[in-house]
Image (cartoon, rainbow, N blue to C red):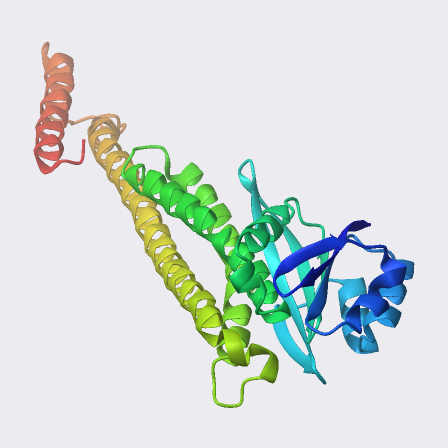
Length: 321
């Protein structure tokens, strides 16, 4: 679906134009066209390919989706794929944004993304001195908007992790903690899959062999690269902390199980006294100690309880009970 199709001249908006007139505006000197699509159909992609003379492989990737974040060069066109990640309640919603940036055009194709980029266009139009840099600045602005949306998600993951850490030593919460930690780990990996490949791709725009399209805006792409490095570092910290928290949580489970085993062993030892005494005095022999004594039975019971009480006090003092 077409979101907008706008022509710009020297950083200033000329007008919204129909798709059929794109080729006419591309022939004007100092003019470039910015088109935005959402969940584009095959017919729309073919029309854009004809108007902008796009490479068929790049068009195929944009149409199919499910691409790894990347930046590829097709002649004088840079084809970029970035993953959009948005919070929907406690879950992460991922989508894709494909950007075609040529000398005098920008085509963005949004797929399965919850939020649009109208704010990026409004920001660019408020800064004509930057928009006059052309399609390379628009490409930066779109990428920067996507990367900026990663920061609140990282903040959310860190906040969730701190909450779980506070509950690690809470008795009886180990199973719930492990489930939440694995859910958090999955979210971190999902965001990491969007950040790390893009960081490597943007890094190639900063070297000595950077594409000519990025020559005038390398400082801006360096800013995006720095943001990605910061996010990647925080995700690494989250991943390491989650691994440590899982180990600590499992250790707490082992400690709890050990405490239960010690209690069971202590009570088993105490009740073994009854079994031992009763087994000895219950044997069918004629000459047993105190067998015919009037107080033999109370003495036997008393001896059993006395030994059991002694063991109970010893186990209690040792912390087993």
